[in-house]
Image (cartoon, rainbow over the protein chains, first blue to last red):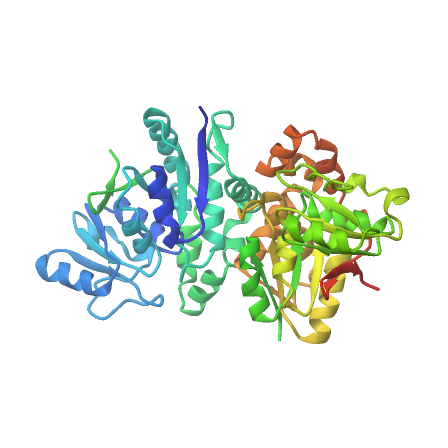
Length: 242
Length: 242
């Protein structure tokens, strides 16, 4: 049996992928997924995603050694240690730490996937590594694969769509059966792969981030396969898959 | 002010585009849009789309000179004169006729757009002509543009997505502001434009049609800009825009 590959275009539809029992790849290129990858690459032990600011503040009260990171409307909330920029996760600040993260897109999508057995975090930064691991898990456990695109405000987001395409383009053609959405994503990625930053920069969310002064985050988040690591979300935490 | 261009991925979301007051381009490449274009090219005076078989049969009872055409599950329903194949609309059969058409995707999408002032029917067959007319109408009337993809069973359909991209790729870059969905569609189209039939053939719906023996319909429906005509839906009828 071929492994079916589908895409949910909005975080709110994560529940469908969970119900199907699929391996889920959560994608929020700008910037949650990219920040998680960067955080783990720089020694963060675990990222605890929360949906609300309230939960994030409460967790921090309980664990004063945890770092509080994330954004609302793109900016670092009051009392937070770091924002949601992948470039902020410097090793000297984060090595060995546990991080509480709340963002408007990605961490919500993750929390909504909590009923799923296999949840990976995908970005351009680790596309190849995630694809490889997803193939392994899907084949070993005989499960299908769903991408959940976090988007912003529940809207379709170009950069997440292209990233799902980057990952799905690595799936072996014979044994992986792409849905129309997944095929569309692969075609989009193939069109832009040689100038990723340029096209991602045309997306609504990228334009907003550029206005806020985060242009370098976009360039960094578009570094395809810069890292070989795979973040996995399990028991409420994102950690490095060993 | 730039003209905003958005895409609704499913017929049921046509109502959003209607509410926005947009010029709507309904796309159902396989096969309703392509059949409408072919019908008008071969002399059909008007196409009356209906949502249900019941309505179609009733209309035919009232007008015995109208042709009854369309499909359910890809096949010609009982008592119909023609199916939903663009190749069936031969001039000797249809010239000067009015056609009642009911299909599972496209005609439903059209009927749901009845509240909109400007509704065009787009296919690969007439992509360039539709794009030109849409630009003209949008600029003259200062309205935005929405694509409504009919899909099949309310699902995202690759061929309609690519066709929206084909049309949107003709919009003037400076004055037309593409949403993330519209940009994604353009990128997908640009990737496949030199081998349209091959990629459209990979879609779920195309595979189903090939099983039913309609492979030639797919080839025909992928003939980019084969016709220069623009069907417009107004007062319950699709006619040639003069």
